[in-house]
Length: 216
Ligand SMILES: Nc1nc2c(ncn2[C@@H]2O[C@H](COP(=O)(O)OP(=O)(O)OP(=O)(O)O)[C@@H](O)[C@H]2O)c(=O)[nH]1
Ligand SMILES: [Zn+2]
Image 1 (tube, rainbow, N blue to C red):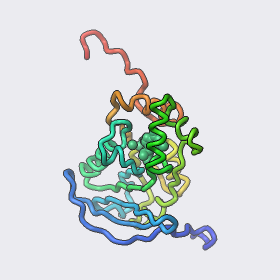
Image 2 (image 1 turned 90 degrees about the vertical axis):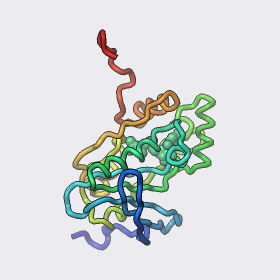
Image 3 (image 1 turned 45 degrees about the vertical axis):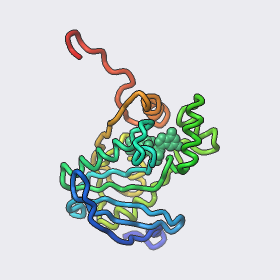
Image 4 (image 1 turned 180 degrees about the vertical axis):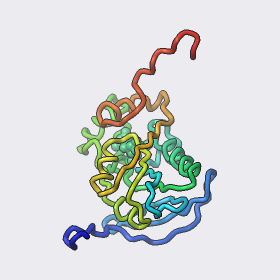
């Protein structure tokens, strides 16, 4: 038993839910509101996730440009779609949609950061030039959100080792890492390479192995 002094303080309210039909499955969409900011965080749930078996899970950070506006500057939209499809295929899992736009710096600052990237900075340098850390995200809200559904053990869809460490620091078991490598293209190649080299993401090799004779 945790003592009261160590009990996690509730930082958000669970509010309500509805059905969320998608092209791949009918999820249940659950809404939470964060006390400090009033931000609305979401959970898309499929199947019986509270039965104790490790749960296929995605902790997705908001990226309006990638998730909604089809931006090819990053891999976010394809990762979100890939995670929902994967959960639908298995019939069981959860996708958290956290409102941590721009790795926590917000949409307008992310657009400022993109502009600096157009002038030659990489994604990390651009954040630093704006006076931010490379990654300002805080995953504390994941604890009460997953607790709502009785989830303690994850099969986490991510390429980010720091996200895995954050989940473990919150007390979750990461039983498996499920890679989510999608939508590498000419526009996001440099960004993905910077994530791998500076932020430690476990991405595909920077140079694909040379094709053998007669193979594509
Ligand atoms: N500040 C900033 N944020 C970005 C940039 N590109 C994408 N983002 C944000 O980065 C967040 C996604 O983080 P990523 O580093 O792409 O991926 P991740 O969530 O750490 O790792 P995965 O679980 O593997 O996807 C979203 O909040 C995006 O809005 C950028 O160039 N600058
Ligand atoms: Zn993105």
